[in-house]
Amino acid sequence: MSATKSKFRRILLKLSGEALAGGQHSGIHPQTIGQIADDVKEAHDQGVQIGLVIGGGNFIRGVAQASQGMDRASSDYMGMLGTVINSMAMQDALEKRGLSTRVQSAISMAAIAEPYIRRRAIRHLEKGRVVIFAAGTGNPYFTTDTAASLRAMEINADVIMKATNVDGIYDKDPKKHTDAKLYSELNYMDVLKQGLQVMDSTAISLCMDNKLPIITFNMNKPGNIARVVRGEKIGTTVK
Image (cartoon, rainbow, N blue to C red):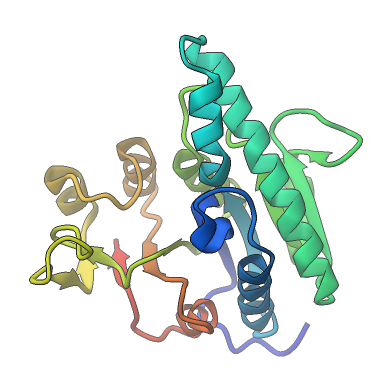
């Protein structure tokens, strides 16, 4: 790995499943996942250790339709399997770019992924591998946002970087309101009291209790992941 130019030693990058779909709304868009992989590699080349959590939103519509009337736990497990598909796709894209990766799953599936073992994950990171954490927490009723917060704390990450489709956190939906105000910095209680859609309240509370900062930024602008890693002031910081 190159000499560090990163502001951070170790990060947890949270991507939504919808991000992988590009403009398709569902499934995986090859050009989009390729662009994300390029950005992750650019950041990794600066010497930062990277853990990844990817949501399953690009499959969740199908899950929701298939699970109507189904037990909530069963439909949540279906969503977790969607995150495993996304993790394997991201692993393939990263390895095509020369990065060594490991997928660790919270649900045992030995043929395709390692089981999640905290010390092993940290060792992989220390060796410069990108570790992709799949299947959420392995428990129903918890989101991948909560999984990202939990994994970030377990691997002693310096920050959670939440990649979104807008420039950061606004006081209202910028896609519906032209006068929406972008915040540069917030504290955890502001986010919880105002009900700002950054991460779910369980994830925010976990970060608040453990003083783990969250940076939200626009992932649709190539190079933004590396810019955040270098410490450039983009997006919104919650701390």
